[in-house]
Each structure stands twice: as C-alpha cells, then as structure tokens.
Length: 151
Image 1 (cartoon, rainbow, N blue to C red):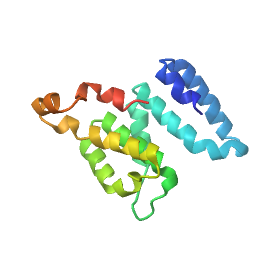
Image 2 (cartoon, helix red, strand yellow):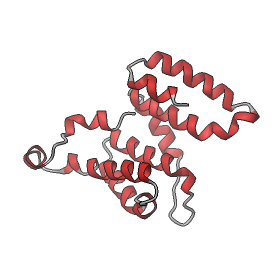
Image 3 (tube, rainbow, N blue to C red):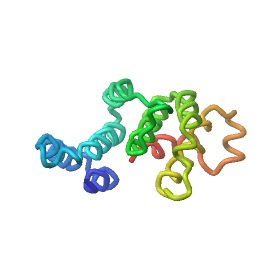
Image 4 (cartoon, rainbow, N blue to C red):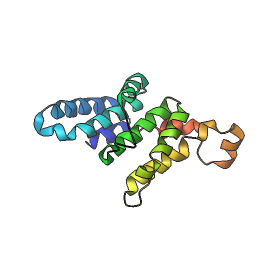
C-alpha cells in the first residue's frame, strides 16, 4: 500500500493509478478485504493529488463521524476528510471538525496522528487571516495550501 503514496509524491500519477486499481481489485477478494480502508484512503489521496475534487467531494458527502460513536480505527479517514474540506476551501467545516474531534486526535502516545492533526489545525485557519497577517506572521503561505493538502 505504500506504493500508492510514493508514486504520486514522485509525480508518477499514472503508475499510482494503475497500482491503486490493482489494490482495489485485490481488496474485492475476501482474503484482502481487511486492507480496504487503506486502499480507500489511497484512492481519496489520489483524487486530491490529481485535482479530482468532484470524486473527493462525493466521498466526503458519504462519510459521517459522530463523537458519540467515535471509532479510533477511522482516525486517518477523518483526517483525510479534513484535507478534502481544505482542498474545497471549506475552511469553516475543517476548523469545526478539527475542534469537535481534537480530543481524539491530539494524543501523546500516537505521534503520527497527533502531528497530522496539529499540521491541519495550523493550516486550516490561514486562508481566513488577513493577507498582511499571513505574510508577516507565518512561515506558511496560503499559496502552499494545495501542496499541504496533497499526499
């Protein structure tokens, strides 16, 4: 499953798509069904990398998270949902989601999740800041937002 993340990062989106299609075919088989969440995550990342916001938006519209029924196994799916919000310039939704599930994401024992959560939390409000504040007070710029929301 790592190949789906490496190939887009190297700019080989066609090879990544072929690899992803093969992984999706494998997860359709019963013995590989447990890998379906990782393949789905890779698919949504591929949509974001290729600018297919329509497909990513369709997926985001079907995803539901509730604090009452929170499942820690879906934490990466949640973080990907926030990335879709950011790619669609739905900053208020991203900030609200991050605020609502902050307790589940910012856990000291889970460094990878906490780092991803904190990075999204830092980037989400930036487009709403006045341009003068963004340019002066932050090393990140809103022009880098697509890079930060891509795999």
